[in-house]
Every structure is written in structure tokens, then in C-alpha cells.
Image (cartoon, rainbow, N blue to C red):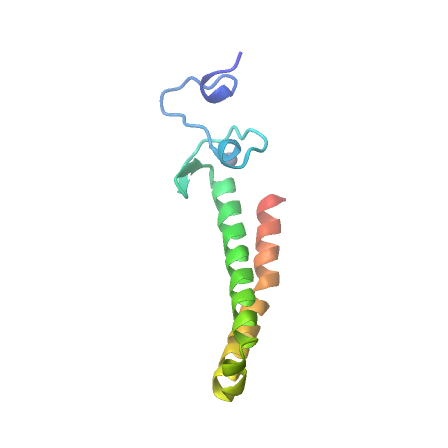
Length: 108
Ligand SMILES: [Zn+2]
């Protein structure tokens, strides 16, 4: 018989289930929620997973934003600024694979 939060045998007063399923509509997680992430109470595993995903999304956003900036004619004509933005883009892009790998580790 399911207990509180739909998890079997979880009636102890201090237990609060990870809300991962409620936030992402996936499988139920029966681990205890111990970390706050974007307003949800999550277990350490899912909090780490969402942090890694957020970091990857942020890096992708930075690369896309810099690509967009570098298409601007005024910026392209300003050699120093274009060089600076290209360097930042290269730096952000170099972090994509490590961020992707970090996310894969949290899912495995
Ligand atoms: Zn969880």
C-alpha cells in the first residue's frame, strides 16, 4: 500500500520524498529530498543531475549568443571586439564536452 507521496512504506515524520517526478514527470524517485533546486525538494542525485543539465544549457546559450553577436556587421568590423568574442566563444565551447560528460555521469 502506498504511503505518503505515493511511495510504499514511507510514513516516518521526517521523510520527504524527492520531487523529481513532480518536476519532470518521469519515474518516481523514492530517495529522500535533501536539496532545494528551483523551488523543488530533490535528492542529491537529482539535484546534481539538474545542476549539470542547467550548466550545459547555460554553456550552449553562451555559445549561441556569441555566435549571434559575431554575425553582427558592426562587431565583425571591430577586430579587437570580434577577437575577444571569438576567444570567449572558444572558451565556452571547450567547456561543452566536459559539461556533457558531467551530465552523463549524473545519469549513469
Ligand atoms: Zn531523486
